[in-house]
Image 1 (cartoon, rainbow, N blue to C red):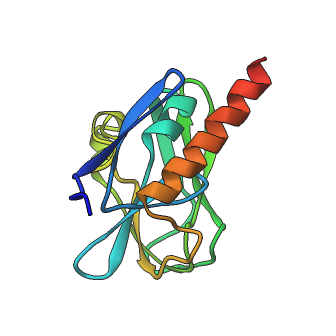
Image 2: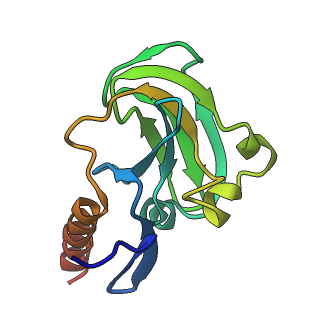
Length: 151
């Protein structure tokens, strides 16, 4: 069996990125990283950032300690190209926002899979949160649909 590398290199059409192996991913292009305290940091994938454009502003409609349902709108993020709602990727408790983004929202773009995480949530991801290989399959299908619409 081949040894796992820290990242999966991904390229399709005009889009390329690296996808960390240790993360879980959602169909809504969020990523989740488990912390040692069983909480999950949640961020936006590089693909979603490309669709959004450079981040301009982010806001949350929930507070620490609030119970969340999977798919619940918890806030929004604005980029130069679009505004998008932020959804809870799992049922659980909202823990905190990444305060570093208040000082430098550019961390979402410059460090999307590390310091640019958006918020933390406590709970257990469902089966719809996939590993990197599942996300690669989803990205392939998404980009193929987009390319089909351009034709």
